[in-house]
Image 1 (cartoon, rainbow, N blue to C red):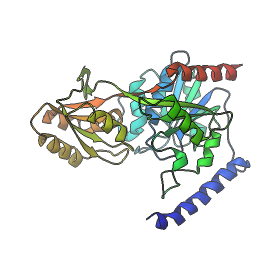
Image 2 (image 1 turned 30 degrees about the vertical axis):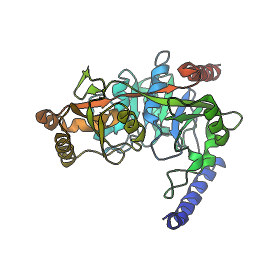
Image 3 (image 1 turned 30 degrees about the horizontal axis):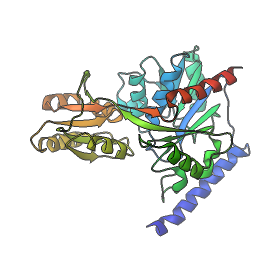
Image 4 (image 1 turned 135 degrees about the vertical axis):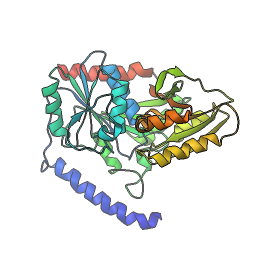
Length: 349
C-alpha cells in the first residue's frame, strides 16, 4: 500500500511546494496587522490536541488583554464570516469554535474561510481587541502572524511522518522552520528530562525556536446537559467511550487505567451524529455487563451531540463529558506563560 501511495504523496508534495514557493517569493501576498496575532497549528491532519491548547493560551491572555479567537470553522455547514455564540448549533459554527466559545464565554470567537478579511471585521465590531488568536492557521499563509506556535504529538511527531496520502502531513517537515516555538503534545505524564532531551535532539529545532513539552490532564467527567453534576472515575465503572476525534488513543489509555472496562465506539473526526448513530450507542450502552456504567464522550463531541438532546433525555442514559486541559512539563505552565509574556512585551515595545 505504501508503494502505491508514494507517487500520490510526491504529487501532493510538489503541489504544496509550489504553493509555498509562491508565498516565499512574494507572488502570493501576505498581510500583517498592527496588533499581536498568534497562530496555533500543526503540520499534520488533526490529533495534536490543538483545541485544548488554543483554549489554554486564550484563557491565559484573557487575564490581561481583550482576546479574539478566529477559526475557519472546519466541518460547519455554513459559509462566510460569523461570530460564534454559545447557543449556536455546531452545524453553523463548527464543533471546535463552539467548544472554545463555551469554554471561554467572555472571549470573542469568530469563524471565516478568509481570515485576511475576517480580522478587520473583528476589529470593526470589537475595537477594543488587543490580540487575535488564529486557530489551526499554520498553513494559512495570507495572514502573517507575529508568533507561530507549532504543535506536534509526542507519539506521532512530524519528523517521523509522511505527506498525505501516504501519511498525515499537510506539508513537508521543512515547513516547521516557520515556527517560533514548538509544543510537543500528549507527552507521557512521567516523561523524564533525559527522554525529552533525546526527543529534542531528534526534533532538531532551529536556534531561534523554543521547545515545550505538554501532557493532557483530565478532570472529573460532568453530565451532558447538567454540567454542575460530576462523577469521578472509579475502578468498578464500565464506560462506553463515544467519540469523533482524530486520535482517541490518549483518552482511551487514561480511561483504561481508571475503569473496570472501556468500550470504544469511534467515528471520523468532526463527525456530525445522525439519529442512527445515537440509537446505536444507546443500544450498545444497554448491552454492557451489569455494573456501574455510563457513556463518556469528549467536549468536542458534546457540542455535536446536543442536536439530539431531546432523544437522549427521553432515553435516560447517563452521558458524561470528559474535560481535558494541557499541562506543561519541566517548569510548568509558568515557563510557557513567561515566553508568551516576553513576546507580547517585545511586540508592544
